Length: 145
Image (tube, rainbow, N blue to C red):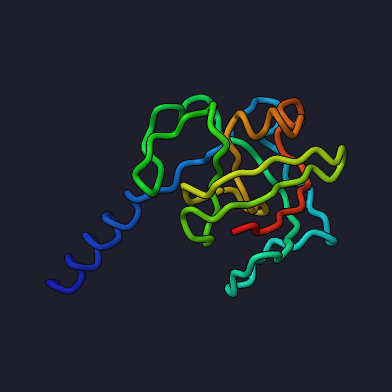
């Protein structure tokens, strides 16, 4: 009976932890089109010049002013991004594959927490890539430093 009680409390503790979704748009909530040519796995060996491809989204307005994973306050008007495993402070060039627009961002948060996406961009970065209408786009990411 004691083991069952411990298991019960562990399940409650685990189920109360949840990740927040970093992208919100009524038009794009169901956007999960898969593309077999896009890789969602980032190699654990981080090296300047490495190039990766995947889907990018951007932070919804409700995250403006909240703390990021590295302790900074998220400012939608800065050029920043979230990635699941790249070190904080990593500088990336992100290119919109459809229109070739580019932006330089710095990793300061963790995410995205939606399957199939590899990076969440700040509002300003998304605007510079001209992706606000689409919400989710295919990108090329190059590690700069």
